Image 1 (cartoon, rainbow, N blue to C red):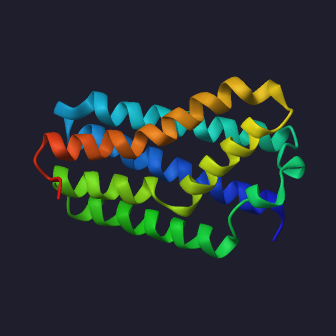
Image 2: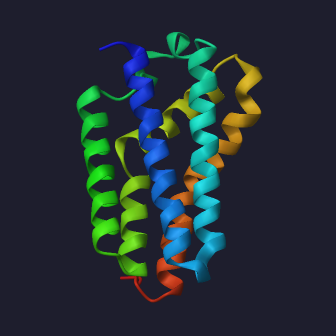
Length: 159
């Protein structure tokens, strides 16, 4: 597969996560700020991936920071589509929504985004450094943010 197919797949997954978070805003209006924060980050990540691709940044990445394989992307997209269908047909509880968000954030493409950001931080290309640092902090914060909400709502307990 071409690099453009891979990056477009990564972008599609970011957009699927954003779409799900947008739906959760409507489903859980009391937690609108929480879901909007995640939504806005996913929109930013999509823009970053598009910009990096159009600037041919991916061709300069080290081997360890190459995009995930197409099979991983396809599985992530299948998961995103099944989640979207599930929540449209049978709305989920807030706890289930948080579990879904965790799975999105732990997916291969999210992991790749983290690796990409780290690779950029280590590179000499300083033009992206500010955006990369922001994205790295957002990505690290997503899992913590979701887990903190789960703790706050009593859905997750320390062992």
